[in-house]
Image (cartoon, rainbow, N blue to C red; front, side, top):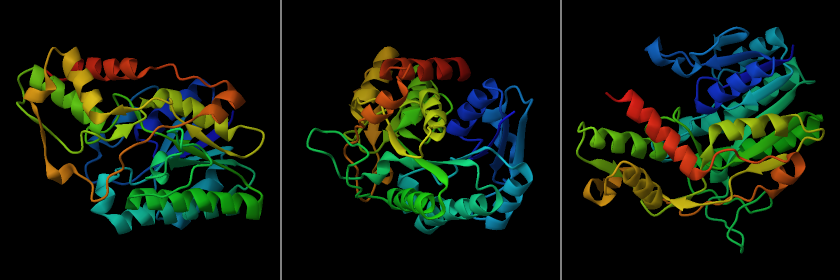
Length: 322
């Protein structure tokens, strides 16, 4: 039985990845940060718990990480833990860097010292590209990285330090450069789930207005289920390498909002207002990923369309908001 170790296991991607690996017969271990309100700390992991083991841990606790890796001796390590909200990274830039940049260094050191024969996956981000777009309108593995947020900057460090450790210490360490990916398990302070949940609340008469930030930023949105499959493929490639994971289609926040409200028989213009507190100091206007390398290497194809993703999220909130 293979063993996997997942940081950020209680997040959207961590929970879907856990389910996927358990379905493949893995023994899955992970860490969650200690929280004074434990009731919802593992709510995304409320599924079949056999062969699933969760410990307290933190990417800023290097000795704790090394102790766990020595004890577990995993075959695969997935570093999904992060301060993951881009706008909030402006509020807590030092914490974001400590977690997303130095945290990667901490777990790489723990991995190198405790179980160097394992394979290591780093959750890199399309936010690393920032304002850079290739002439054909896509971002790919070779696109220049010019991040426009503390989050993006911290992720670039993580991406580069993985490269360094791969080459310097001959480790099987890889980067998955994931574009935006959503699901019903996405935190409701992220724009897709915020829009869907807010629209359903309006539909059910529980709210009258939805406050958003920049309506005209474009994102390449996929489903987390599709993207965790890609993580496993990337990690288990015979040669450690880096891959963009994306749908290749982009939609604006305005288009996404219009789709959601229209599916509920509503006109978003009657309910949505812009609140400056949700604007970023430096906006990222456009993301669209070229995942040709991933598709040609692994025959990976996303199972969800943009519309199917939004429909699943709408259905979830319609069933769960009384």
